[in-house]
Picture 1 (cartoon, helix red, strand yellow):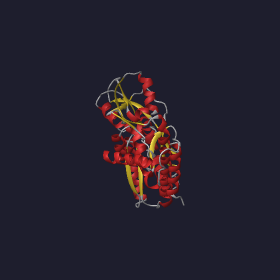
Picture 2 (cartoon, rainbow, N blue to C red; picture 1 turned 90 degrees about the horizontal axis):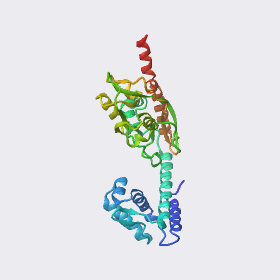
Picture 3 (tube, rainbow, N blue to C red; picture 1 turned 60 degrees about the vertical axis):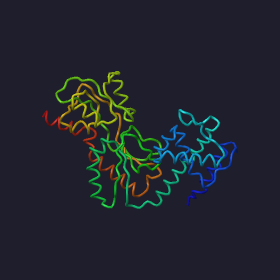
Picture 4 (cartoon, rainbow, N blue to C red; picture 1 turned 45 degrees about the horizontal axis):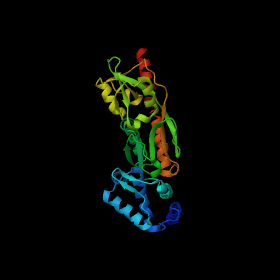
Length: 321
């Protein structure tokens, strides 16, 4: 059995050493203040830390003041531009980051050891997968396992599964990030689409977290800087294309079913990603999560023809015949 207090004390000792033995050692009662310290260090401001932690401004100020009073060390330089950590105190933040990582690992282990076979599963996926691919999959799973409950977080930003923000991620990627366990269930086919009957149009591109995807980098090379409008959602780009605002690269499952759109046959998009169903390694073998992950993978794989573009290709071939 893992003793959280023992772990906390070890971190307190590490922090004391990181300060070069200066100030008073952190005790068991105030080690939770470290997450407030780390949030301010990462955000660079009290307001940013408050938003990240879901608390108010005054709570962050109080916890930082409590930490500094308890340890006898002023961690931050407070300026009009925000909160900064001087070089001679960076080791404190680094040690606090170790505390945060290990506490998250502890929570995952404890959560996994106590998890029931049935219960709630938190899924995270993109807005387009959540709206187009996932609803019939979830409906199938609910019929197969009625005792399971789902929370679906639709976001194009990648949540940190290491912080247990979600149990399972359904994402498009070339490969899994370190620390994740899962499987690729279908190649993700992209095409360039324009409004039906429209000619060659200006380019619409990707922004935000979606702008870092391999398909966004491919588009930048093809468009040559001639991108008129950008969006962080394929669903938004689909609507712009349908309104005649230009042409965009979209997943086949987004563009193919829409009668307002047609592919641009002159531009072929290479294979850039696959759909993955994955969990953090610490949660991967929890019975409830492993079971749901396998069911999700099988259900999405059963719809592979819509995701990899062959559904349209078969229809086009049948029409040509």
